[in-house]
Length: 335
Ligand SMILES: O=C(O)CCC(=O)N[C@@H](CCC(=O)O)C(=O)O
Ligand SMILES: [Zn+2]
Image 1 (spheres, protein in one colour):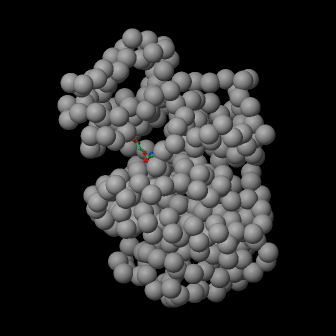
Image 2 (tube, rainbow, N blue to C red):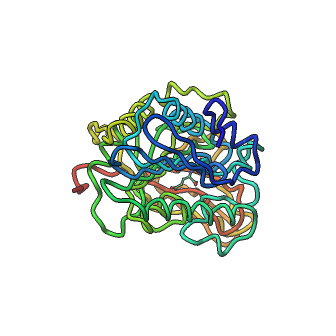
């Protein structure tokens, strides 16, 4: 594979058909193109962990795409030593080209086999990503399986950087993961309260990976991101790539929230009674009617409950937002 300037993003965007399986050898390992925007790196040294880093599952969420492209370039240039197995995924090249969140259907609702219930160009992509992740984790031998799916949000946010932690079905939370959230500069973490069909939950439930969706600020077009604001994440990923170490800081500096309600758009006239510029984590008083349609009304149950990811510009049946409630670290148990 020739990868001019080791610029995988440019290669992916400029070559719509680039599914040939070819190999690139670099100082500390080799890289194999598995499909458009999907590249697997194997170190020469014994691998410390198997790590999936994905971005651009929504095509317009460009900051983490640029970050992963830069890290990959540094590995291929020999500036970073590879000590882990690494699968880098630029999730939705076609939507990245058009600068859209998605083309036909939201790719991040199609995992865990949910693509079977949909049609559109994302269906094949979800299958391909599931297949790539499966073959990657099935060959895992030592250390941890990790998957960080990197996003940026449509709206501004009271807490700009935050994680959505997958529902664990009662399995213990790993302290290491929450310490990592603090180290990469996250200000909040949301604990999901039920299964979803997102990419990170897919890796958690089907491959036993420690996984999370990581939100890294607001969406901007390519070239307009302030990558300096991702410095802590960049540093932590370099440490993971080079030493196989998960950075840690005091998890208690991160605000802890639980999801108390998933708002579903249940009719065409479903609306949220908030302004378009209301930020993620805006809190409401008990009794406030947050959502209404001809078939339902949702009132805030407890003062302080807040909205995250409000969005009604989607088909009936899909998630129109999360209602979250702040939790205390005192009662939170990890191993
Ligand atoms: O800003 C928004 O409304 C959406 C940002 C985004 O794409 N978030 C992810 C979160 C996935 C998860 O819940 O783990 C999504 O909606 O797919
Ligand atoms: Zn996203």
